[in-house]
Amino acid sequence: QVQLVESGGGLVQAGGSLRLSCAASDITFSNYNMGWFRQAPGKEREFVAAIAWTGGSTYYADSVKGRFIISRDNAKNTVYLQMNSLKSEDTAVYYCNRVDLSNYPQTKAVFGSWGQGTQVTVSS
Image (cartoon, rainbow, N blue to C red; front, side, top):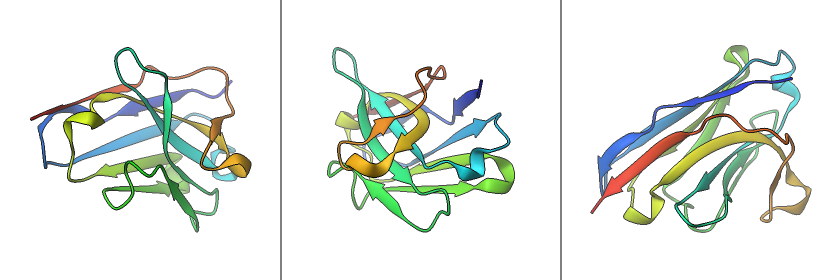
């Protein structure tokens, strides 16, 4: 079973930036469309961004368009999320997962299990 390990979160002031990483243990990672999700306290987990297995196409939730950039390095089995112009409403635990892009923007995760996530806290 693939393991996903998210890292890079932290405390940042509004307007600041963070870069998240997600390392996958599966050697077939390069065949997967991958995405980022987030869950704020008291809210359901929501889709944030996704990237096709080729890296050629990217997809974003409206709330992060123009501020976040998703990328991947298939040689390192890693997907990244560059988060700029952070807002207090971006505060959440961020997770990565394989995604099904057929229902974008209602993008769903494919793997039933999740990593531990990485906490992002934006202070205003």
